[in-house]
Length: 164
Image (cartoon, rainbow, N blue to C red; front, side, top):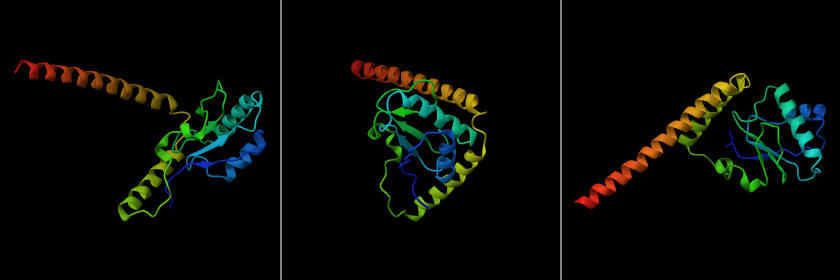
């Protein structure tokens, strides 16, 4: 079993039929992947991105879970849900790891993660997207408020220390 690290998906033809075939043959959704649009003209990029999004939706592959699919493009692409980055170095650093031999404890955790990823992959995430976004919004709000509370507690503690 491998550690999930980024893998580039090289796509020559961005037609829907070819994308469906390519996504069926590769591990999109099972490992973090990205595709580069550097060889495409700026006019072709939005069409290619829309085709990728349609092909993923038709194959019931959600571009964020369990493992993300990203697009690398120098120009911004509007109107799609897939995350777009200008270069590979800008991708989230979580999956930039070197392949190495795992210890027993790490291997057990990876096996557990793989099982959970399969459970996520079997769910229809397009239907649950609103529920997930609502949960994220609540978590972000909780984080923001606890960060603010921590800030005020630190100020109060500093003021109390100065009074002594």
